[in-house]
Length: 119
View 1: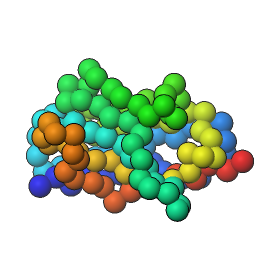
View 2: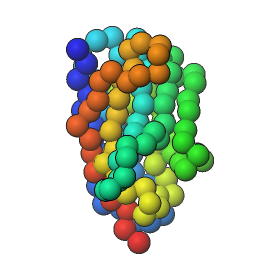
View 3: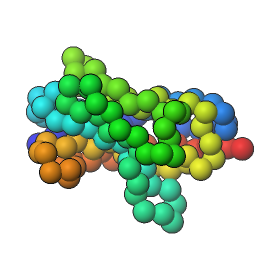
């Protein structure tokens, strides 16, 4: 079992920055890949970014590429999402997720943290 707890969300003006954190517990953190997803009101959940087990590989949605950076600290069992140049369309609940296997499916999810970007 893996427990994930997100933090760092809040209200920010367009053009500003936020850093989300996701603290994991329950299994060896370095043994699973991590991802960030988001869901805006009335929309389906969408992929934002992912990072491999060794943090050498990262992936981003086109909509956030160049503005968001995913990173992980295996010693702290934490994954981060640094969000810069925020836009109003980035407003959503952000979720972190853990992928234990290698089939592309995420097995565990956090409860989410709200990010609101005002104009």
